[in-house]
Image (cartoon, rainbow, N blue to C red):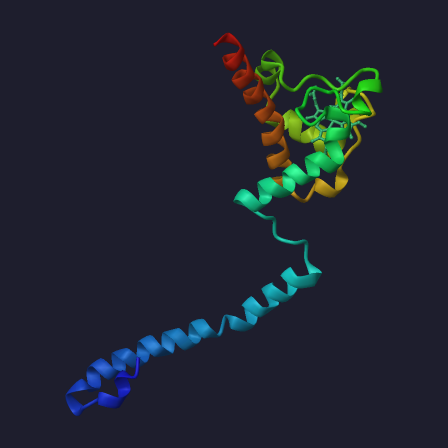
Amino acid sequence: MGGAAVMSTEDVPKARCREDVLGDRSSRGWRWPGWSIVLALWAGCAPEPELTGEPLRAQAQALWQSRCANCHGVTGRGDGATGRSLDPRPRDFQDAAWQTRVDDARLRRVIVEGGAALGLSAEMAANVDLADRPAMVGALVEIVRGFADQARDRGMRETK
Ligand code: HEC
């Protein structure tokens, strides 16, 4: 930074080089309009880029509570207020045998396309708004998977 001020004649070749570097930088700067467009899209016009990491998990938890727990229950056992009155009832997500039987792809499909699409109860509604939010669907699948761990933890506590 500010190197040009101390430039002497011997420095000319180096200065050239420095200029090239600066030139490079300013051509990199040219991408700024592109980035502003990306930001503009981000702000309003395009689908929001998905959250990742902890914020994503937090949002998925909130979604679970507001949209799923009523049937599947806070702890995934299918014992939410509405879930209890359904026939068939949502299954117990803490069932370890079921957890190993079912693959993530199927869970993802049920969540996005709804139960009827996979021969399950139509009470399990589609969540079409999640079709373009694969990371959120993944985080919900993680929550469903997490209930198996809860069961394991409980089992360990109980056998102690
Ligand atoms: C109106 C009640 C209801 C709500 C709300 C609901 N589900 Fe379901 N869900 C069900 C029922 C009922 C089934 C299927 C039971 C069956 O047919 O075996 C099911 C099935 C599933 C399955 C597949 C289980 C399997 O056997 O393969 C997943 C995964 C699932 N739900 C996740 C979710 C998620 C995530 C949400 C929230 C975005 C949600 N559900 C909201 C009632 C509900």
